[in-house]
Image (cartoon, rainbow, N blue to C red; front, side, top):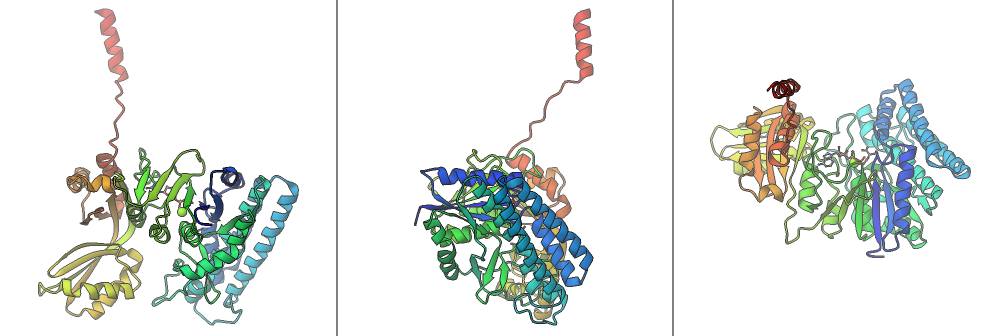
Amino acid sequence: MEGSVQVLKFGGTSVGSGERIRRVASIIGYHVRDSAGMFPVVVVSAMSGVTDQLLRIARFACTGEHESCQQELDALKQKHLEAADKAVHKREGRQALQHDLQVAFTMLEQDISAVEAGRSTTTREPTGESHITAWALHAAPTIGAWGERFSVLLVAATARDVGVLAVPVREEVIITSDLQFDTLPAFGTVVGADHLPLETRVNVARLISPLIERGVVPVAPGFIGRTVRGFVTTLGRNGSDYSATVIGEALDCAEVTIYTDVDGVLSADPRVVANTRLLPRLTYAEAARLSWFGAKVLHPRTLIPVAHRNIPVRVRNTFRPHTRGTVVGPELATRSAAAAITVRRQLALITVENSDLFGAPENAGQVFELAARAGAAPVAICSSSGHHLAFVVEEQAVDPVVALLQHDMGSWRVSHRRGLAACACIGSGFTADPMSPARAITALARERIPVITQGASDTGIILIVEESDSERALRCLHRDLIAPVIPLVRHEVHDTHEKRREIRQG
Ligand code: ADP
Ligand code: ASP
Ligand code: MG
């Protein structure tokens, strides 16, 4: 099968309405008919906004707010039935889809009732857990998983409606390890599991390969997985990109395409910066850093399963499928010359200092081990000297990290500062120019944006600023380092009238 399969992943906005799902179905049809092409395996997200709705339902189920839970559920049902109505034109197919959706909603209702009754949704036994434990272990994954399960029904039925042989994959394809919580995640947050490559490969061979062999397009759910013990898990928010590459690797696919709502990976978030540029090529390392530092277009783990196999990942626009998009692949002899700026928000800076003026390097291992034990990976390490170490973590993790450091590192002074953001200037387009860091700092200074601390590496520079300055920082860095905004020159109307009069009179 090697080299003959490609994975097409469609995100939440791409499947955000019945009309959009029809568009997705026609793209799948195009890939099936393209005789030179590779056979498509489809991975889909929940319709946009649906996972948020489901997680609200899960919260209401945990806290016993039954009425609010029911209202959200009704709205969710309405949304999917309306989408089914618009997406599938032939009556028979539409009725079958409506039936499948109703069955799925009944199963979701059973999961909600189990959480409301304080039971484990898997064992049906009373758990006697606090609502935070119930949330983390059962409610968030089991209820949150339903968005993708509804989507596979909608997309497969619509593909059939436009003449493509397609079926929904109703079981979780990806196998994960059990989630281990040293400390329970905050109520409302979703923690992503790690996939198990060998077990997933076995499952893919069972669930997906037989369909491909029969020429049937499998439509699989992104975001969700199942632990070896049979519990439903998720790969974390925005995790369907990661699902696509996990499934792609298990299939030994030739390529993965992430279809989304922008033309590809751009030089900055187009919602904040107006004149962004498309980056036609990125190396795996560049794309991984961009997503780590906040470019939402790819989930930060997306490239992990495919980079070591040199499987290319394309990012393309569902709404302009003729455009070439971005190709993410291995480093070539020629540099990508890509340059992009991203912002990662909700960070806190932790500084660990020793009045002895010695010791930081020896104790760095201990500091990061304690941070990891408190559930926080450093987002960036900013500075270190003989007696001091500064690094940023996600804001939500700062309290447990600081508490643990203060407890375990007796003579060290631990301080922290919240409300920060990291602006990352990334890509060989920057690093090739030794003056880039100076230009970045000058750009911020010109706008009077203080740089709280910074870090640099051979792949780019990180500037830590106040979160409230981060949008302005992104715009001015983009303007001064990537794409100058050339102001339109308008002549004052008044002057022109004056000039005409002068000419007439003179
Ligand atoms: P999907 O629903 O397809 O998964 P996402 O909303 O997760 O889509 O990701 C696409 C969004 O990522 C775009 O609409 C854009 O606003 C945002 N984004 C942020 N940074 C970038 C960037 N550098 N390039 C492209 N898109 C970006
Ligand atoms: N539906 C999930 C989320 O909203 C996963 C995804 O869309 O990638 O987080
Ligand atoms: Mg996404």
